[in-house]
Each structure stands twice: as C-alpha cells, then as structure tokens.
Length: 179
Image 1 (cartoon, rainbow, N blue to C red):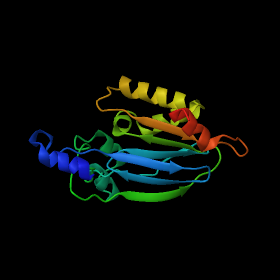
Image 2: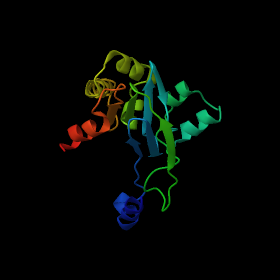
Image 3: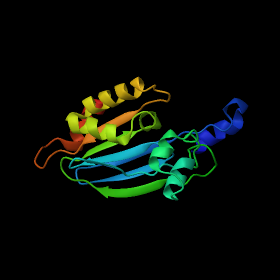
C-alpha cells in the first residue's frame, strides 16, 4: 500500500491510482483470507457457491444497507467506485478472516474482471460441471472474455483434496512454482 500510495504522490500522471487484492493462505483444514477492494474469494462446498469477501465499493455498501439489490448492483454504472483500495490513502484497512475447509472444497479467487462479466450463478454452474481447477479457470476466463472482458481477469482455483487424497497444498505449490 505504501509503495503504491507514494508512487501516486510522486508522479502526477499516477495520482489517484490504486488496486485491489485478495489473498489466501490455505492448508488442508483452514484458510486465512485478506482482501481490500472488489476482488473476491468464493468457496464451493457441497454444490453451493458462497462469496466469503465483501466488496469494498459504493454499490457493495448500498447492497449491505438494503438500498439496492445485488442484481441492481451488478448492473449499476457506479460499480467501479471503490470505498477501499491499495494506494488510495496512506493507510488502508485490510479485512482478514479465517475459514474452516473440508475435503473436496474448492477455493476460487478472482478479480472484478470475472464478477462484472459473469454472474455468480454462472460461476457456480461452471464449477459444478468441471472437476479440474485449471479447467474451471480456463472456462471462466473464456466466459468473461465472451461477455465483453472490459477489465483484467485474474482467477486462481484450488481444490482441497479428499480425505486420504494425498498431495494437497504442497503438491499445488510444487505445480505452480516448479518446486
């Protein structure tokens, strides 16, 4: 946050810049999630998709207060107005939460390039249809692009191995980073 904020102050062309982040530290039984902005973390468990993060945006706040519906927020021209972002201010409040995980859960982290283009019901349908996390990512990126792809689209999916499935997070890290 400090680096982004200082760069924005040092160079007039970068004034007001900011970004969002969602991060998760995952093991086979739990995860810790940290986020700022409108990048999201979803949990797929037993056929149900749940958004575990709250959007730090004007429309997110309006939904929370009951002023508009989630459907109205998805179509609002004000959905890009963030109430919190990295680099916007010298200090930023980061939401941090712990969540239990069960064997077979799928964790999905995504920028707003997905959520602005693909509704949650369609995200859930893709996850229900696909078993492989990489295939889920590929299909969701393709759907987002086909819907107009007006923003960057970054998605990470990780499946918690079934009990006795072996490998787990160490295997995932090894695949991602070649270690």
